Image (cartoon, rainbow, N blue to C red; front, side, top):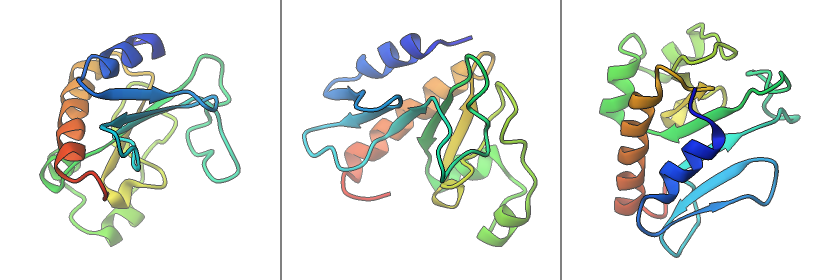
Length: 139
């Protein structure tokens, strides 16, 4: 399994990236503006997001935005917001890519405790970093 420390080190390997640790979670930013993260590691449930049951021992969720083509390749059955809302995903499954429970409609992708999915996650994180460089003020 890719640990939080390993994921954090991978993210810090990108030029100009900082990881904020101002809460129990980690927010990765690219460049000086730091308006929107290009990756997050969430380590706990809160009042707005508890679908992944991150209160389980040792569980964390890696989240990253994707572009339309990448999201479509990951979830080919989801071609509209309506289909996304009607779809059934196991937001508690370990090592499985799924649309973010809240931000899936913005094409964010999540995985809990990546292991066999870690190579795919690295590619998605590289693409997310590039997207952030191209569009620093929006998601």
